[in-house]
Length: 481
Image (cartoon, rainbow, N blue to C red; front, top):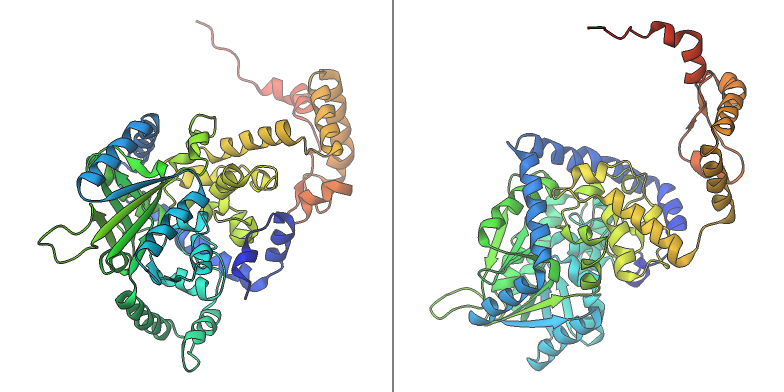
């Protein structure tokens, strides 16, 4: 299996080519659009007023970001008023130090974790393991890839790239005898192993889907009971949230609950929606003795005031991955970072640097399928174009051939006679040779366009020629009064 640490890389082109040549991966990815992607469309199609609801969700996120400083202060006051503690982390390193310190001060040697992309973002697991603290992922998919020493390949389905045979091989590492590739057997085995960890862990670490400033409540949404066990059984609960996850009031939460599950898995509502407000109160039977909330910046405040602010609307549903033709051909690991797909092509350069991730803004056809699928209407194609602009301005990493081609194109478009001459030549040569067909291979560096798809040949006749010969004679006369 691929080592966990090697999942992060900046070799997007090489990793993409490797993914395209992996027949097993291609087979798994083909089913992605037929399952999660299709369920997404059906779920929203059956929801009355779905479009208006999505616009409402976007508006709430927009307004929340506009007053983010006040909402975060309100959230902190409410959490502390209910017996919790709030910690502020400027970056991943500070967040790791805070969490490690909380665990070491209490002598914690084992923690259980529910699924959290934010903890993946700050590389929490390797840091805790290096400090001698055992970390056990309790989401079934996360548990599998943790044993396989891999990173998640999808925001919602982290092990979607693996076959049941591979999963059986991985889980057999924890079993005294080899496990058969049967989903029910594998699930039963994992449940038994994880129950043992829940009973013996001294702390639970979770992510946060939403945080309600009005009440100091954190919301965790999942389809497995592991999140509730993680946050209630151990005596210490540490929740890690990106600062953009806060929403103003509890009345806003149902809007996001309706769109998140539909966008993520095509469900009307996720199986478990947990609302946690502070530690266990006197007289309560369930819940931790201590609750700590770590609020992470990690570049978000820098994004907040810029043209890419809309990327902070993301609610981590994975809908854009399911719709994206690029992701559905190369999978998640090719992107090289924690976040994959169209939103990952935006977030990874913003969080980890644009220059080392310069291929990611170009990892899109700009077809708009991601924006159409997004439950909060993030204009991802526009954000990718803005990143491409910034890439040119900041790094100047544009090949001379590309610069020359665009300059020639711009020169031609400013001169009608040159444009007419070029289109006349194209239709009289390639256009009449191919007669509306397709070009299988373009010459030189342009072959990249046709490596995976054909290129449409020019038409054998220009619209201008058709209009002069017969089109204008077919035009209806302008009616007179």
